[in-house]
Length: 286
Image 1 (cartoon, rainbow, N blue to C red):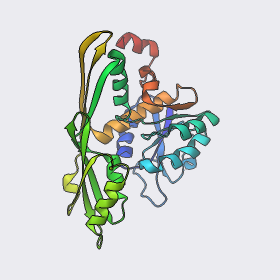
Image 2: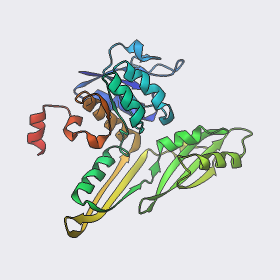
Image 3: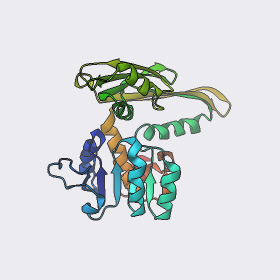
């Protein structure tokens, strides 16, 4: 059994518990939370990884901007890490140095969608791929919006406008005394939002707006050899944190089959994400 720990217990962390419990080849070693956090009923909860005993891999379900500082000491202990951020250079060097594996950008986009884009490119090397997200809640963007001074709560929705262009609708609840214009400027200036059409609105409550649903529509029109007008479409409608957590669990499994280093999903054989005997899987899938 692969012993996996969860670091952080937000939306993704909670769904990761479900995904791990459903995995036939994995065991939940426990959850690491900030000191002072409430223990999770029925699950070993600690403030440091050392308190969980032996751990093979850790799912980093923390805010994206704290992933690097969380991952580096775990890799130094030889614990494989899985996260949704692109930190290839720093985590790769640490993983190789300590004979560990880091799988980055391990969600659905970047992540499994990256694999689909890779296959589309292989099938039609010349052409254009459009990736259209949503409509749905962006967890990473919501965390960034909530981090701004004067914000009590925030929700960022991704609205597709076509041809890979998106609008960010950011809804904020302000702390007492905060100025909306200051909050709006801080959000729009952040690199998470500055490259998109971002619209910020003040609301009295966020809970009434929350919906974990999300989706993606990928389209590629290209050329296979010299044959024009090859058209590919991939679409899905999902629960955002549930799918992210499931992909991270699959990546934790794959990390046990890889040489030390840092990997993105397109670099990993799809078979490595699955439990079971390799030859039986090949017979079933090929």
